[in-house]
Image (tube, rainbow over all chains, first blue to last red):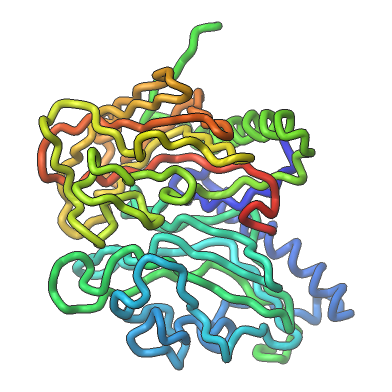
Length: 208
Length: 203
């Protein structure tokens, strides 16, 4: 086993049973001690919870990629026209690029939920890029999931961690123009969702 | 057994965990090769997803698509122009990479399988590609038969334990055997890039 940094996004359909759970647990088990040390709080005073797309990450708040910026905790949004086509565009706007105090986010994969629609649509995003603290941390190829329509999700062993008070940008590369390639003047929808966890002090949002 | 086994095996014919075992063994081999040839310790290298256009120049040839694809998508999901192939004559190999392309300096690309992405379309179309040929450094290295994977709807993918490795500065070509005219080919190569940390990504 080598010690090179492995940032590959791997479809869950290509993993052995239990591998996703192991990755998730490894991420949590790495993040909790880090947060405990940095916040000087014992693990029993921390909570590991789901990500709220807007309140925690400000997903879909930049106007270039979205037809109407999101203002609530919804992962799906309408993708704007060709102005955003073919390049990386921000998912979190310039006003929302610093992680909250006492909050740590780990992102270790993606879900593509469009196959659960009554009429599945094309996936309009081909790549995601994560920049944390001024460095490009990962570029994920979302198309690796496309061969597995009944299990469209993927994970990585190298989670992207966004520490408290740190600048972060999440970018998406749109590969289909506004009409979805169909010729009609209609925007496509994004049904990508990030897999990850929040670790923060108990009581900040939740008191289980 | 010293024979070179370059067969493409459908992942549905493999035991649980075998795809991961193949991926990890390919990663170990390519990282060791890159570390040795670049004279860098493994912890100064990164393994990352392939960017189809910026790393491979895939679908940047009008042999393969009627209009070149110059963004990072595996070709047919591109809608900047006509997506369908229009071969002069079906039943031939057509080049998917721009003629004369060489791999970037300090960059290794390993390819160990293929995925068929058309099954995630709303209206599933026929697969237009049967064979995939890799020419590295002016030698034909491998021919894979994608057709054998098509028995397994929802999991149309195949892998090989003998990857194609494209080293820095090497000329290469990926050619697809197209069976019919005017059908978009939905194909993704499974693989990864190994390169020094900081060349593109600084995790």
